[in-house]
Image (tube, rainbow, N blue to C red):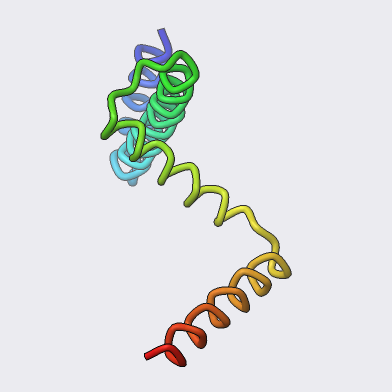
Length: 99
């Protein structure tokens, strides 16, 4: 339904506006990017459901846990990141003193 509507709008733009094909191409590109983004969110949701139900194999489960850790790190505040960095630096100093 939407595809036909956007196709008609694109054809009208191409016919009436001198730079219509460029504009129509930009609209198509934006639609493709939006579709890709929605697909990625659906895949993440499916992985969450499979993990909750215990349907992931060992490799998928490890990858899922790593991805969750990475997303949690992306959502940390600057204070939490500084605290984690201090802990890591302290551990590295301890390791370097042992050697």
